[in-house]
Length: 516
Image (cartoon, rainbow, N blue to C red):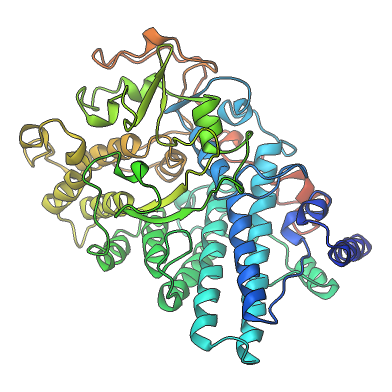
């Protein structure tokens, strides 16, 4: 095994010496132990290395042929959408994910893992390189800590995201002692670091993963000074903590974090406002940059897959949900700024509107999510429960989409218990974040929930373009379900650790998710 790693690092430095792209190397080695070189000998080279880290988050690589947006760009949204029931895979492109027929060699989940650990490693290289640059006086301490905070933010959210895909939920065991993913907190950029990684390549517990994630986010909150939307900010770290604590069912912590940034953002007046101006609206907290020259391409970009190619449709399951008011503005289609698009009678999202150069940002965090996280925690908390404020916070998101908020807004007479409030919030999340890659997060964390339980992966409409007559919002009738539900105790509920990892990492050979 040591000889294998030595060959990997030799190849890595040979590639670096001749100036080849990362993709050449990354197609040959396990991504959780990939070696890279990045420069930190001047402010300019540091900036390039940081931008390379964000590029890895936005684009990734796929079979050496360019990236499709793993792990935080377009593919993040598409894979998370297709794991849930509120979209329909119209062709064969996302069929493996949609129908849960993946295995340890399947490309989509394999590159999720590969590109995730590639990003984590780049973040670790930035952390170590900038730490040395600060010590040598190349950049100031404040500048260095800002960059390290951004790197730790990306490391944190990526560890978290991989854990949600490859491990059971936090509450699967009473103390979260079940297997999570591999934690990587040191750069792998030399033979020695590869050997160290080999010696510490086992999976951590889910509790350990979450503790590491929160420590990184705490550092990011305290040290990042950047305020740009497409780079991590202190507020983004706070916002993401509300998501992490929601998964941990740490309701009081969700409330504490959400209150920190309650007045830092405002919801757009219209539900389409975020997508009318996804670079400069008042609601977005953190988005992944996509440009005409840097995007997921024809086989990945949101404007391509969801727009021009129409490979994922809105499911009649959510469209016909009787809790989604028939005159809700988020149902509208026909106008350029509507959130829904009708094509030959079937319905698709219109959130991503650049179908030619694919420059729509990939949304990761926006204020609407933080508000709904807060509302749910307020309804659930045993020490801070406030159903009135929970309903008011829910209404802040929902009311802007209502035809007549004066008569349609929720009241305490409509929602009389914590369970009813939470159920309304979960439905609101499905509507508000439709086609934004958030449904799987809720499916994952609500397994065995006491108020709004989900058992496994819900049944779905059959793979293929939904027939126009399946869309019947006025009826509230569930459409035919051609893809059966998968129970929580089925091995397919979570993705496997890729064979490309287990075949070279002896520490995880016996730690594969059962069933694969």
